[in-house]
Each structure stands twice: as C-alpha cells, then as structure tokens.
Amino acid sequence: MSIKQISVFLENKPGQLKAMTAALASNNIDMRALSLAETKDFGIARLIVDDVFDAVNVLKDNDFVASLTPVLAVEIPDETGGLDRLLSIFDETQVNIEYMYAFLGGKETKKACMIFRVADTKTAEARLAGKGLTILSQEDIAEL
Image (tube, rainbow, N blue to C red):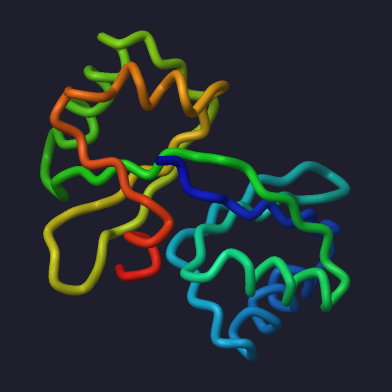
C-alpha cells in the first residue's frame, strides 16, 4: 500500500522553490510533507500532496520536471520513542531505509507520519505486515 511521492527538480537559484509552491497553492494543492535536498547546481523537492494527479499536472504545466516515486507512509505515535520503536521493526524485518522524513498527521491527532523510501516497497510491505503498523494509503493521506 505504497503512496506516491513527487520529486521536483529545481535549479539552485533564488525563487525556484517559491515558484513551485506558488503554482501548487494557486491550484489548491495541499502539501502534506516537503523535503528538500540540494547540490551546488540543483535541488530535489520531495512532496507528499493531497492530490498527486492534479499536482503533477500543475507542475508540468508550469515547466517543472517532476517524477513519481513509490514510498511507504507509516503512522506512529507523536511521542518520545515512537520513531525508535518503528525503526526497531524495520531492523527486525531487515528493511533497509534509503531516506526518510516526517510530518504531523493532522489537526486532531497525536500521530506523526514517517515517509520511507526503500529499495522495494512491495517486499518491505510484506515484511512489515502483521507487525502492528498502520501503513497509510494515498486516500488516507488525502484525508489528513
């Protein structure tokens, strides 16, 4: 039950990130999470949004290069040790994490959501099944 992350390539110069967020905001695309990695010449914005299809179309219509990547979204308690307990399950099941980032899981909840990029989401899902985790779907993300 992976979700889709949008990766947007941005030239590393002033105003590029703002232009991307303005395009999304003016089209009512709600970002749930954002991670930004950079090098000297370019950056990669990784986004989790409420409507992936609309967001990709908006980005492409505004001349941004965007691609989709499957990632796992796992809900955890927003409390001390929550991430450590989750990472223990990943360690126990030998699921290797390529990168991760987090966001809070909504206005009325005491939960956080961790986004994980792993080499093979299907294998990771199978290994994590039955471990008491809440793995979110794209629909769950849209409702947060």
